Length: 85
Length: 153
Image (cartoon, each protein chain N blue to C red):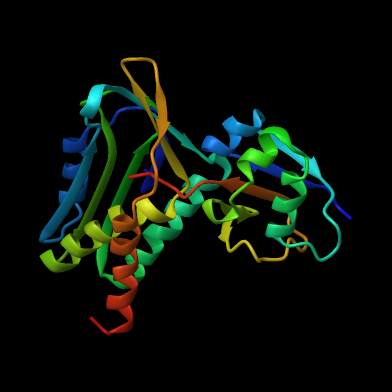
């Protein structure tokens, strides 16, 4: 399966201490499944992913719900609810 | 000139307003957001998702254009470090009539707050920092535009 690029923003990036990672999610995985895989890494990952309800996601630069399948997407972004304006 | 500008640079709100006034409509509405220096805040750091931000804001502008008869739209959103008193965001709309200009301007700023990938971090005089949390009221304001759409208003 194609590698998935994962980008982090705001406090998600700060807790993890990285801007991005590459992962190869299992076939059929959803965004929430990838969040669980990342949480299992422990440390800052576990801290940032501890409460998925606090996270929002975009697949290939489109906002999606956490139960969305990764499908053929190349880029997943994980971040807190947005606060622009 | 692009209707949407995302970047660190300051902008001239009067020049933007003049450009909208020159579009030939009878109504121009604008909103300018300014950084407030509350509670010892010395700066806001605006983080965003560079690959997505402009396209997403353009999608929001397209929704406004689909919903109201607009002659022109300008959206400028700054990113990076901004100190109290700095302009942070500009929304301007031009239309033939005031209702479309005013409503679309309000819609755009409500949706920029809740549907565009920006994150604000507050920096305080004591060296501490805090990520701003999304406000339930802001989500409710944005959602209210959907309710109006479905009720036919």
